[in-house]
Length: 251
Ligand SMILES: C[S@@+](CC[C@H](N)C(=O)[O-])C[C@H]1O[C@@H](n2cnc3c(N)ncnc32)[C@H](O)[C@@H]1O
Image (tube, rainbow, N blue to C red; front, side, top):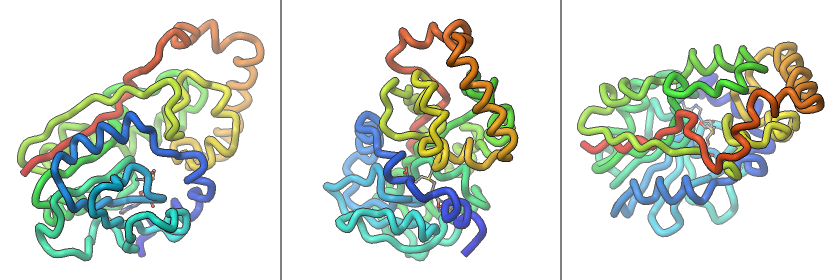
């Protein structure tokens, strides 16, 4: 198994508690899967967003993540996107949620998804160049650098997947239940909690001294009103576009 798996073997403990599928995002993904009755979920983690009313097979390289799949979750194979152990056109559709930025070789992985899916390839991903998470980056500039280094511009997906690509912006609800990077844009105190940032790669994977400095600065701004002075206008919003996109690639 490649080193990509090791990242989530290292930071994945506590994932299923911190990263619960958000029902609004789930609904968008399931709509995009249309009438597919067999679905391959790649980078499946603990099973978030897997539809229960279709035949699902999961692919996930990390044993820590596999161990958090519920007993009644879809069957899972330990493998990577870059080498899917399935025949051409084996599934009606393939999906991947917040996973592509972790792959060692995106071009190979996307070609593999396209190869095994007869119908749509559905990806929930983030283009950090489209909308940088500006206020978090003020405290954690290393997160901005990490995001820039691993994000795939949306235009590249069209080239890599071929066919037609539908791009659907997915605003992040203020009470998003899936604790990904930008989930707490209106709940800044949450980022101080190691149970929140621990399974969040954008903060867990930056150098510890830089993370500690950012946490100190955020804590101070929350205590003296600095955060509210700078970003308090966000408190009136119920959802915010932070670059998350649902991509639906049709052959
Ligand atoms: C942020 S988690 C998302 C998990 C799940 N899709 C979800 O929405 O909760 C990213 C997942 O991608 C997996 N991953 C990393 N490299 C991979 C690769 N090369 N192929 C497939 N999955 C990979 C990780 O192990 C991890 O489980």
